[in-house]
Amino acid sequence: MRAVASRVRGASVAVDGRTVGAFEGEGLLVLLGVTHADGAEDVERMARKLWELRLLGGERSCADAGAPLLVISQFTLYGDTRKGRRPSWSAAARPEVAEPVIDAVVAALRARGAHVETGVFGAEMAVASVNDGPFTVLVET
Image (cartoon, rainbow, N blue to C red; front, side, top):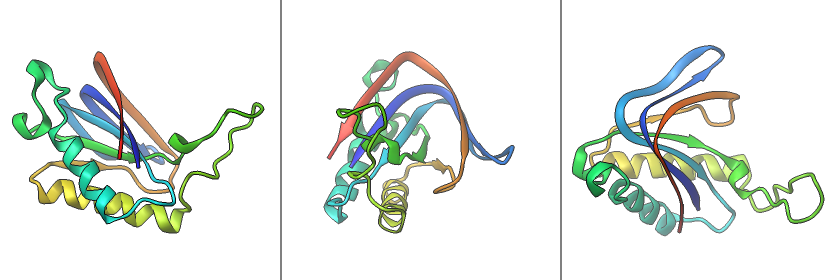
């Protein structure tokens, strides 16, 4: 599993012009990708990492600050561009595999007490954010 986590001062996601997830203030925007081998152990590890990652101001985590997360499914994180100009998506999990894993990460975050907003799996989404820093890291399990 792979995530790009950005410290933001607010983020939102819209589908068909309608906002489906948003938060104001300090938090994390998380783009989350799933590969074929990801399982329950990866779900728990990723949820813990995202919740406890010390990216916020003062080296605090979302857990420390009670800060929200906006989690967006992002299969393109497993795009392979080493050959040619067209990315290969073969390392990305198929939608029927990836969607339950993404949902499980969101559920695991919520079980830890996180306020989590989400997009809509498989939809064309317009994601907006105010990057803080900018401060963005790659998180892998």
